[in-house]
Image (cartoon, rainbow, N blue to C red):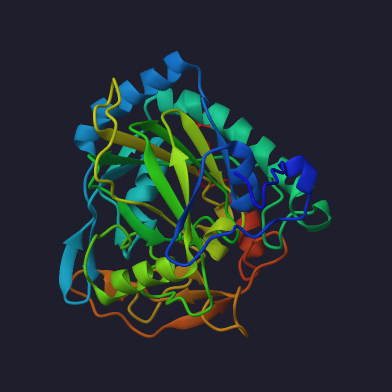
Length: 374
């Protein structure tokens, strides 16, 4: 990509990040890893796995796709379903128990939690190594003074859950959203592996006037509707412009520590797709995530409804922008109204909550990572 006829690599720009030249109503398309690293909070690695291993994983997950389901959530006075299917994969019976009876998503416990497949386990080791390498590279080359961000964990990133999503055809999508921080903590890093059909990954910055209630939930984001929220989200993307990143088969996209608080992302619907020789018109996406022990549901606040609260980052007002808060999420549970519970969240410099630090240190690790559980 060029700007004023000049091409610069991340080595030439060093820590001086450049504002992407997005324009009102326009989409800036980025393809090269160098441009993606310079203009977005992401890193992409093309041809991440040996071709044979990528195809093995794709075939394995295509077989698993018959077990994937659509989540339900409340949107105004309607119960709606997400327009793509998904499931969570973990490595041990204890993790399965926790994911179905302790961790909540959109105010409800997950029923579709499955055992990690052999290829998912093997690939997670490579993802873990690559993500940790890229985290350190970004700290050295991009972040101020070569230091991690405030609240970013200094510990090794160890994925202990994998979210598998299937987009069956060009119409299946996911709307603009930020991934839920509740169990990942502030400034999380996520490794996202794309397999099968290539799709368009769109991102845009979060502006102060964004409605951080209306569109930012990971569990209610994927509805394609004509609601006021979805119309407002589309309008904001047009007003400021957006960036599109091409996600081909066997590419690993790393969403770095500033992504969820400062940007929103989506998989846009497409008119057509170029069929993949193995998956046809389907795209399989695996997002590897690190659930932090210090944010286990036993420590997080409950609202007045008795439900688990969710962790959010304030974005609407300049004076509170960047602060974290615990909020009631019950209004997004079908059949519940919710309450007005609100509490500011406090974290130490490494992103651990301060109120239960001693209790957490006395506990054994809650979730092992994939490779450690082999």
